[in-house]
Image (tube, rainbow, N blue to C red; front, side):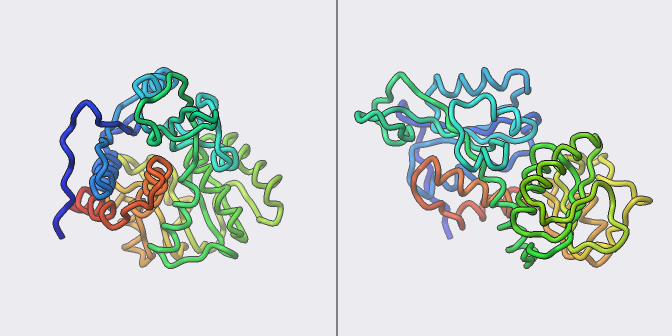
Length: 305
C-alpha cells in the first residue's frame, strides 16, 4: 500500500511536538507524521530535547507559537502536572501528563482545541491529558493476550511511567502487585496511593518469592546498549514469570526481553503502548479517529527496519 502524500510546509502549517530528555530515540515523529498525512492535514510533528528545568518555558513557548499540542516523555510527565493551565480527569486520576492540547475561547467563551480556529485568539491555555494508562492495558491485552484482572504482577519502576502503570493495573483488578524501585521511598509513596484507592489489591514492596503472571518494566534501563537489567538476577529470575512487557521499544529487544525470551516467557516491547497512546493523543488534537494502520506501519518500519 502506498503511503499518503505529505502536504508541503507553508505559512499555514500547524505544529505538534514531543518533548523529552533524551528524545533522540523517540519513534513518535514518524508515527504521528504518518497519521497526520493519512488524515490529509497540513500539520507537522517535531521532537525537541528539553531539559527538566526548561520544561515550563518550553510549554509556554509552544503556546506562544500556537502549536496544536505536545506529547511529553521521560522525565516530564510528573513535572507537567503543575505546569499546564488545566487538567483533564485522566491526568488527575493518574497524576501524570503525557499529552497537552492547546485551546482558545470561541465566540461563546467555551474553550475549544486550536484546530477549530483559523484566526487564533490571543488567549490560549494548555490542557493536560494522560493517554498512557489505557495504552498500557491495551498493549498487554493485544500483544500478550492477557487480561489483567486477578493476575499477579511485578512492576519495575515507580517514576512517572511506573506510577501510572501500577495505578492502572490496580484499577484493572490485579490480585497482587509487587513494586520494585531504586529509590524505596518513591515505591512506598505509590504503594500508599494504591492502598488508599484500591484496598482490595494485595501489595508488597520488593520481589515475589514465587511465580508471577507478568513482569512489567517501566524504567529506562534498556534504552542504552550498556544498561544493566532493571533487577539483579540474584533477586529474581525471569523464568518465574509467565510474560514480560518492557515499555521500551527502541531497541526492539532489550536485554530484559532477550533474557525472558530465552527463558520461554511470552514477551512484548512498548511499540503497542506507544501506538495506542499516540493514537489517542492525535484524536484529542484532531477530533477525528486515528488512522491506526498507517501509524502502526510507520512504527514497525522505524523500530524493526
